[in-house]
Image 1: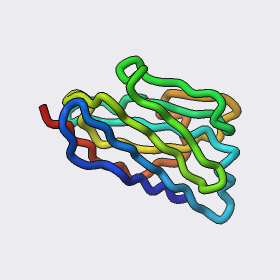
Image 2: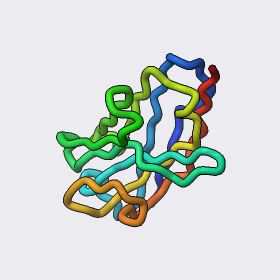
Image 3: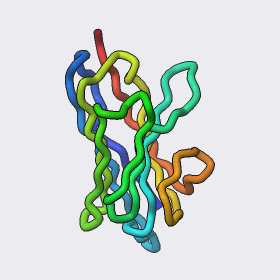
Image 4: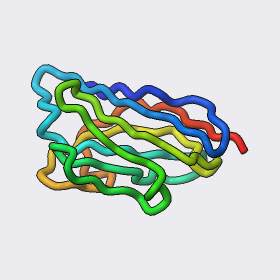
Amino acid sequence: VQLQASGGGLVQAGGSLRLSCAASGRTFTFSSYVMGWFRQAPGKEREFVAATSWSGSSTRYGDSVKGRFTISRDNAKNTVYLQMNSLEPEDSAVYYCAAASRSAIVSTQRQYDYWGQGTQVTVSS
């Protein structure tokens, strides 16, 4: 299973970015996995950002991003997205997508089975 995250970059505070994570694998059924985004800033622990259910009808967000970030998925394209608006310098981190073989949304790292390589997001003040 491969999760390829992209879309990171440098943006000014108040700006927006859209991250994408494309999943692939011979036996990987994307629509059967909860998909999530985590992030890790230098010197800090990895934290939960957002997750979406199989169909995308249910979502969950970390407190620090509620109202600013939106997670979505396109099962036909095996891709999950993270739309990030009103970005703040505190949002600067490496963002990772992850897949969990769970029937309900989960938000802890150990519950995720597969991880992407991460994409850097830097927000300047």
